Length: 441
Image (cartoon, rainbow, N blue to C red; front, side, top):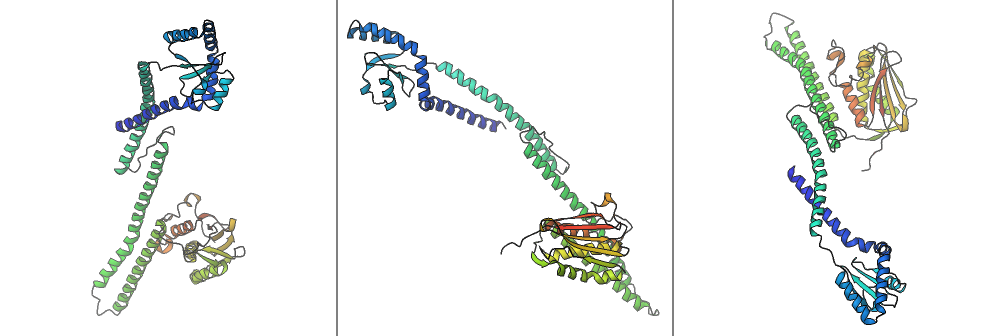
């Protein structure tokens, strides 16, 4: 920090010195007209007295004027002489006009000036610089100290807040994921600290989500693996030759093992699909689909399963747009997940609606007449591996990934999914998909 302070201080001092030099060298040239006017006003009395003095000296002849100028040079800081204005090469056209109008002319160096006399001659005066080196050094030292004090305060404030941010980063890196900088809004590095806090919040949420995912995966894998181990152990026991049902039991155990393997395969497929959607690895294959035809094909693929549960599937697409741009495969999976979820809890009817949303959006609604979901739990149903009813097993509640996948599919389409109460008291899921365009190849 000290090294940074010294570098910053050196840059400030050099910049201030260059600014002072620039002011001294350029302001007389830049504001020459203004300064000349000011000098004329300030030197009116001085010019009048000087003119009167030389006029009285002229009464004694040319020698009297020379003697008067010699006395001026002896007693004044400035040096005087009489010049012919036509011989001065540095006069501009405006300055020559000013001399003709009997006006004092100040040169751009700020040291030479020319005073027209009544007899048509011009008095040239030149003032050398006074030796104020000691005073100038004291002034520059004061300026340097004045620049150092606010720099010290500014750097100390930065150093203090950066130390807080550094400690927070060190604590977060050490595994304390709840560490936050929490700097005041008046801090100079508040924006950086806020970005750090938001980053830490996202990382903590991501790690917590991964831990919950691992716990959920472990729990879901444990039961089918245990059943497989139990089934294999039963198969390893020798069948009784005298029992006619031994072969039948053997086949039933094999069928149970196959079901467990299929269940594991389905779980792994669901996990892979959710992982791809969660990481954004799935690239949308956007197509312009006819909504009626797409909806009919999706409903037809699940109609038999719904009929086996003795449920009625009502489909309404009168208000749907004719076409919509989406990934039909992913969107079909989301709709199937919603229909299967509704089929688990519906008493008699599942209602599906496709409607036109605002600004060309497509709204898909799946509603059941089941017991519904309490309002405090509605935001949690989209969490992976969540089962609100602990009594539900995977045969009634699935793996707990279906609704989480629905939400991710809606998000990758730029939309969202909402849950509220249906007209019959059941659950109503509404997926809103904004209008999209197919990118050019």
